[in-house]
Image (cartoon, rainbow, N blue to C red; front, side, top):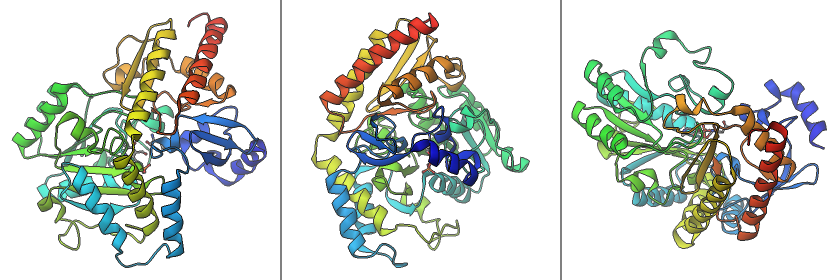
Amino acid sequence: MSINLWKEAQQLFAGGVNSPVRALVKPYPFYTSKGEGPFLITEDGKKIVDYVLGYGPLILGHSPEKVRNKIMEQVQKGWLYGTPSRIEVELAKKIIFHIPSAQKIRFVNSGTEATMNAIRLVRGFTGREKIIKFNGNYHGAHDYGLIEAGSAVSEYGITISKGIPKDIVKTVLLCEYNDLTCVEKYLKEENVAGVIMEPVMGNYGVIPPKTDFIKGIRELTSAFGTLLIFDEVITGFRLGLSGAQGMFGVVPDVTTLGKIIGGGLPIGAIAGRREIMDSITPAGEVFNAGTFNANPLSMAAGLATIEELEHTNAYEISNEAAKVISQEVDQMMKIDHVTHRVGSMMQFFLGVKEVKNATEAKKANKSLYLNLHEQLLKEGVFIPPSQLETIFTSASHSQNVINFTIDKFRKVLREIKNDKGSS
Ligand SMILES: Cc1ncc(COP(=O)(O)O)c(C=O)c1O
Ligand SMILES: N[C@H](C=O)CCC(=O)O
C-alpha cells in the first residue's frame, strides 16, 4: 500500500521523497508499481491516466514496445563500458541532424548537468562572467540556476536557494520573461557571457514567448557578442524533431537537452556550434567529465525514442490530444482563466486574465488549481500537483482516454463550483 511505503519513506528521505515536487501529492504521494501506455498502476491497485509522464520525457507513453526492446537488447550487451560505444555515435548523429544549432554534442546525465556545463561553457568561451536568466525559468538544481527559478523552487517559496555563495548570485542578472527592454539594458550595461532561457516556459505552467521577444533576444545577443543558450530540456524533441528552435525559426549558439533524448532514462546534453563546443575538455579547457556520460542504456532508449518520433505520427497524436483537452476544458471553465498550449504542453491558470511572465502566473489561484488536481486524481486522472508544472500528453493518449479525461474534468469542475462557489 502507498500509505505504508510513505510512512517508511519519511524516515528514509528528506521530506519523504527524492525530488520535492513529488511530495506535493496530498494527502500522501501514491506509489507506482507499473507504467503502461498512458496509465500508471499504483501500489493500491488503481489505474490512473497520466498527464505528468515523468515530468516530460515519456512522449510515447510508458514502456513503449520499441524502446523497451532496444533497452533489453542493450542490457544483453552490458550497460557500462568506460569506453566509447557505437550507440553514442548513432544518437549524436540523429540529434545533430535534427537540432538546427547542434554541430557537436557532449552527453551528460541530467538536464541539471547540461545547463550547469552550458553556463560554464559560455563563460569559458567568452571570457566573461555574467549570465542573464529569466524569472521563473528553471534550469535544474545547480548554483547558477537556483535564483528566482520556477518549478518546485518557487512552489516551495524559495527565491534563492540557501547554500549558494553570494558571489555566484551576483553573476546572475534577472529579467522578466517577454521583457526585451530588460535584456537590452543589461547587455548594454554589463559584460554578459550568455543569456539562458527556456524557449517556451514549462516550469511556471506553460508560457509561450512573444515572437518579437525570442527573435529580439537572438538579434541583441549577436550584436553584443553574448552567447544565447536555449534550455530545451523540456521542449527538445517535444515540440517537433527540431525542438522550439525549429518551431520559432530562432537558432541559439548553445542548446541544452535532456528528458526525451534519453527515452525515459537519465540523460542530458550540451550541443552547439563547433568552435564553441571545442572549448570543452579534452579539446579545450572548459572541464567536463562523467563516469556515466553517454551510458549505453540511455543512448539506446533515446535512439529508439527518436526513431519512433521520426517514423510514426506520435507528434500528431500527442498534439491533438492536448489540443482537444485544452479546448474542451477552456470551454468548461466559467471563471477567469488563461489556457496555454504549445504542441503537447499545456497548463491552465485559474483566476487571472493574462499570463505572459512568472509575476503574472504567480497571481493565479493556487488553491483552486490544487483542488482541481486532487479531485481529478480521485477520479483517476493525474495532472501535476503544482500549477507551475506542465501538463503533458503522449502518443499513447487514445481517443478513449481523452474522452474519459474530459468527462472527469467536467465532473470535477462542476463539484469545485459547488464546493467553492467560484468556478
Ligand atoms: C527546462 C529544464 N531545464 C533543466 C531541467 C533539469 O533537468 P533534470 O531534472 O534532468 O536535472 C529541467 C527539469 O528538471 C527543465 O525543465
Ligand atoms: N519541473 C521539473 C522538471 O522539469 C520537474 C522534475 C522534478 O523536479 O522532479
